[in-house]
Length: 176
Length: 141
Image (spheres, chains in turn blue, green):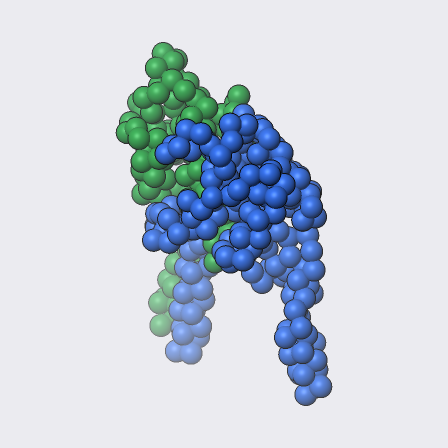
């Protein structure tokens, strides 16, 4: 009878093991979509899209990114960088665990950040362009395992990015 | 008792082999290509491919994608979305129809290691795209 249980468990594992299909609501627009758009976009009063794009490239370079792809005809720039991801709280936790004899705990070691910067002629105001930036990151730990894979949505990040961009383009970034 | 065990074991084996697709299908794609193509394709009544490409890009951004590559001449856009530790890769192409009166958009996406074959998911994408374009998405024969 015990063996039968094991077989049932193995069967259950077999079923869950291959169920990694995409959730049905994957491409449904999130409720926060409008807020995200406002967070990630600014309006610039200019008729020169290429100038705006090249200002974006300059800001990304200032921030230490390397440019991966550019396409001026549809206003796309993508850039990426890999940087340190250690944070003091995690290191303290790992040290404490080691002191208590808990052995080796893996901590976040590096993060790969990717950003796309897109310009779009504004539909509401013909005298300008919308610029939208989206940041995402993959964090890996000291053992090379992925611990986080996410879209970055912190307000300060985008505020700072557009602050730098408006300085670079000599235009004022207007909230949408 | 023994027969029951054997039967369960056999059922288990079928389950395991059942989800392991053959080597060729993983590289060359599944056999249901016609079905897939129809769920992944819509046509939009416009002759301006560039506008379609730009709206594809902004729709993808609305869905939290980061654009990896875009080529306006070819009409291709590739993007990646990181979602609760999962990776969604998507390529969207826009090409003029043979009559040049409409633009045909095809989207295909992959969720982690598996292609997305759920029509509902593609429907949601095309519905967002058509809202953004102010055009209705028509099925392609």
